[in-house]
Amino acid sequence: MLRRTLLATTLALIAAPALAQTSIRTRWTVKSSEGLDAIAILGPLSGKPFYARYCEAEMAVFKPRLPAAAAEALTSLHAEADAAGGLLWPGLTLVFSGGPTATLGDLLASLDAAETVLKPPFQASVYWDAADWARFLAGRDRLRLVLTGLRDAGFPEFRRSLAEAPAARRIAELNPLLARLDIIAEQERLLGRRLDPRIEIDLSWFCRPHGVKVQGQRFIAHVGASDQVMVLTAAHEILHPPFDMAGPTARACLAVLEKDALFTRILAEKDKGTGYNELDGILNEDTCQALDQIIQERLGYVVRPAAERWTKNDQGMHVLAAGLYGLLKADGYDRTGGDLEAWMSAAAKGGKLAPASLHAAAARVLGRPADQLWVTPAAKT
Image 1 (cartoon, rainbow, N blue to C red):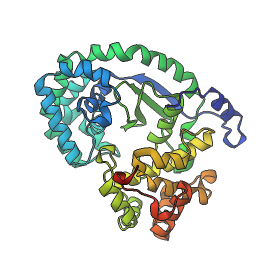
Image 2 (spheres, rainbow, N blue to C red):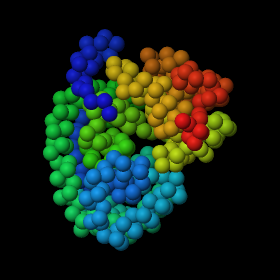
Image 3 (cartoon, rainbow, N blue to C red):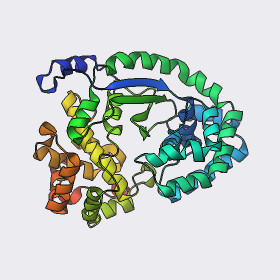
């Protein structure tokens, strides 16, 4: 990841007339969480290359300590998540984030009282899904085995030796930089609705390669992520969901996209380990990616130009993001802002999301022919 300070950027932001603010709405909190890291380590402990390659040295030390019963329970939980088309540890953080997460002990206590501690906030959130909750309860006994196995293997001490000092340094670096960035104001301008001004970042040692949104305006990011990537993660994650993913606008969009053979191919051919294995998940994620690319540009820095980002990330599967970004820019929405849900509803009903329009917009952004927007991964060189 590119490592550079945002000081020059933030000073430029303050000076830029187009983005001048009478006051900064965004209120940042940066901290670290042993409990959320205890869930995040379940990714690399699975042995899946998607996760394990990021912390091979840590796994060489810690994985042999994990009791066999805990390792077996973790394997079965990962298998069930895979079969359901989901990712285990990001899904677990979503449920657990409704309760206390400061320590591993907090997680165990919440697990034992899940119906009273975890279910009410999860059920009240925009993420509620009865099937997800049923799977959580079905795996509770095995999850308890895993979490007690982490405790018995000395996870709190192990994590503290790795993460405590880097997290303290990172918090001291980020606080003065983030205080100058009004991410919330930009998101409100593009979504067309008011947001809670608070953003909470939980720094994690084991979360790579994910930045994970949980309940509330809170997300998990790697402690070593650059200033630039940290801000991008905030610009992206707080947007989820960009509108009601069970509402009429989402249904109208999906009705159009379901008929598009391009997305049928992408879902069939992509690596399932990258997530976004259902069309509604792609709609949610790619809408947010299109908007966060605009926010990056508005703030005066870009982690990756649009064409490069959507060509390289996740095997190039985010064609919808490129198409939406192109359509929004063509409409001048990046300059004017507006009501995103109304814009998406009109796009679905007015033909903008149909292949002829959407594919052409994506092709312009990606700089390649409309019939080559997706290349089967096995065929890539």
